[in-house]
Length: 224
Length: 215
Image 1 (cartoon, each protein chain N blue to C red):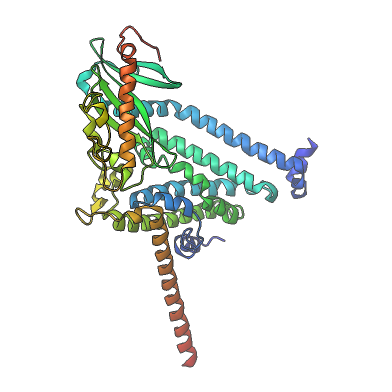
Image 2 (cartoon, rainbow over the protein chains, first blue to last red):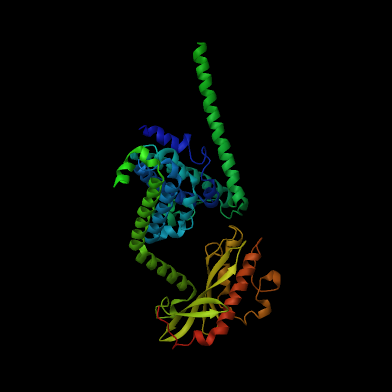
């Protein structure tokens, strides 16, 4: 299966980690209080997903089903530790923003999920593409949820983005309403559940609309 | 090596020996990688942490108070079963100010870690929060990025305000509480007061120039 278009369509939308597979919800609720936090967590997870998929796919010939779970966990936990050390040592400014979230990647079941359902059965290149696609899909979801909560909760968008991305990205930081009193509920965990619920419902509506349209078109064709 | 060639065949991999060797092999591989990465990054990480500490200390002890490397000029004090590392700011050899961490109970069972700077006379030079898990939008006004509240401690000492007014306004004290959050500021005020009492208690030892520890 070398259908890279399909792999990316799956990762970004059809089989999106958050919106379809409903994985990674625990770190999601914790970090998505701002779009910037969501972006940082998403990118760090993408890096780990990519590496984990490559390593698992290259070792897949030797891994037997009976002990695959401990082997995957060992590999993923080590990759996260390596990422944690490297970011701490060489990207220290980023580490101060993300430091707390990096160990959380270990408990993100989407990394184990991709190792199990994709990388353990597919060649290295396809697995790398899958890791990247799933990671970008997750990043998209985290930024979307973080952005909604940030706008509703504190009327800013991408606050402190320059800390994460460097000063060239300072233009992303927006204050939408001056002197906004804040809507605390959105920043607390219930806000995460509410936003996620509405977004999931929105995705269903879109998909439903798309499928009814398709059915109608087919119907018209057969009548004519 | 009968086993090794046996393991190359798929049916040979269904043995307990292969499973153990696989787990062991992967464990060996990843621990080697982690040890190597640790060796590679340790010096950089220590350096970064030292810089972070320096940046924090600079916020609570103004530069005019010292000409030494205060990160390395430390005394360790045993205070009721707790060890406190005290950083000392000297000018021309004389200790002008000290800085140390104090902890305050935070939301739930979490801890807030503060760092305070105190001059020779026991007057607060500054207080900053290093880490906390307070509710965003309520308790997080203790951060300087969110509010100026914490700067209100500068210039205060154990006698200013008098002991019975060392509290938030709700408790008859002089310090503001935040709208909707009294517990966080109350805890911080109490911890800062505790920090000043620590200084008063160990003053002679902290200001003793001859006392020096090698790090």
